[in-house]
Length: 290
Ligand SMILES: NC(=O)c1ccc[n+]([C@@H]2O[C@H](COP(=O)([O-])OP(=O)(O)OC[C@H]3O[C@@H](n4cnc5c(N)ncnc54)[C@H](OP(=O)(O)O)[C@@H]3O)[C@@H](O)[C@H]2O)c1
Image 1 (cartoon, rainbow, N blue to C red):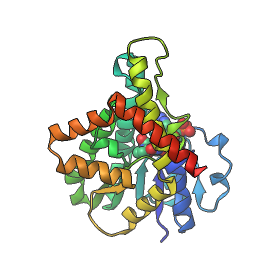
Image 2 (cartoon, rainbow, N blue to C red; image 1 turned 120 degrees about the vertical axis):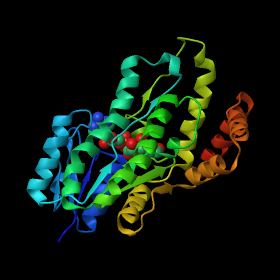
Image 3 (cartoon, rainbow, N blue to C red; image 1 turned 180 degrees about the vertical axis):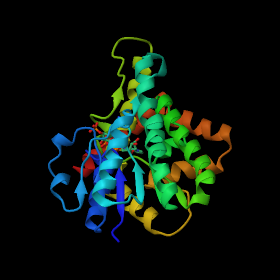
């Protein structure tokens, strides 16, 4: 029997590439998104449906799962992918911005999980793939709330796997490094703080440097889709899958360096002189590539 995957956040980036990957492999795909009316490509593909699903709206989650079950009879895999980044100095964020970050990246992922678990438990099988980030086990400046959301996802998934495994349900975590997607464009809720406070002068070069790094070193969303495909099909009970050289290097450093030393390295990397030096290097690399 054909297998079925439900994916959140398929309008662009990792979610979209994952939907295309599974469709090419002959799976049934429930490619959910907030505004399917704008979708041109996925809606026209065989064995793909695009129900509305906003992870902050529980009714849309229930309806999308029901529509998927009515169409395909069973859901075997759920990919919790929807998310975005709130970026900038913490003091400048409004409570609404912080709430929205958690409602989407953490509570939204939990709501989708809670809605699918009864179904998985009943069929005594199911796989939950959760797109966290290398930001869920490492730390950069000016990403405090985004980090908090992804660390929360890591902790949630790591604990959940124990309680659901005896019902045949598996949990896996995907940890991409920088990926070339809309995450760095329209999906970012970014505080530039132009001229509004003390943070402006110090935060802007650091944010620019991270943007440059994303422009230069980011992997493709199809690389993440490939890892998700492997995680679904490798038959292992492995929990974490890291994607990208940057993520591997950062998480290795986090693992082997004592906490104080890791913090020292990060402080040095993001010091004013390093940032300015690294930006010059990045301009040179960009010029060489053009
Ligand atoms: N790009 C990176 O460098 C990177 C690195 C590590 C992890 N990640 C994680 O990867 C995941 C996918 O991001 P991406 O890089 O593929 O960025 P993206 O291209 O911006 O895709 C984000 C997707 O999430 C959707 N979304 C946002 N809020 C939603 C909500 N309330 N309900 C349902 N869908 C919602 C967006 O839909 P709309 O079109 O409606 O906005 C979009 O489809 C995120 O969880 C992100 O944190 C990204």
